[in-house]
Image 1 (cartoon, one colour):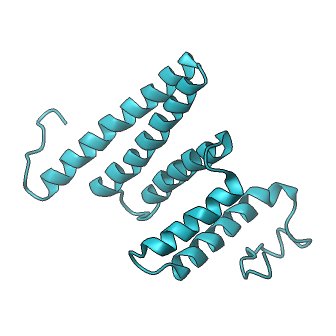
Image 2: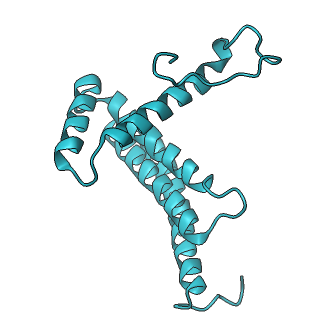
Length: 158
């Protein structure tokens, strides 16, 4: 991570000896951020060849159709949803909330699909329940955004 310029800073008073095993997740997050930033910097806007090459490299490492690749995709959707909520610390705006919940819906529906493929009916039910709850939040936040721009009226019982 040092060679990539992605070494996270630890407070010398808190970690005089540097990172420890329990810092692994934070270090992985820093590495992930570095990879995403470098990838973004290397990509030309709307260039399908760049996107294809990036995807090809990913598939070569993970495999085109594996449980691992599916779990990576679900984790990416969940992480994106959480990051969308954290963009504005003062207030979560309706469009931001709707986008975040839409990521949760996508992750949970894909998770339900994977459970179905494995014959895990209880897992399907659990994932679909989470997806349905998130979908309600998406619709409510979209309505709130319409209210904010004057295309709809706020519901009286809210």
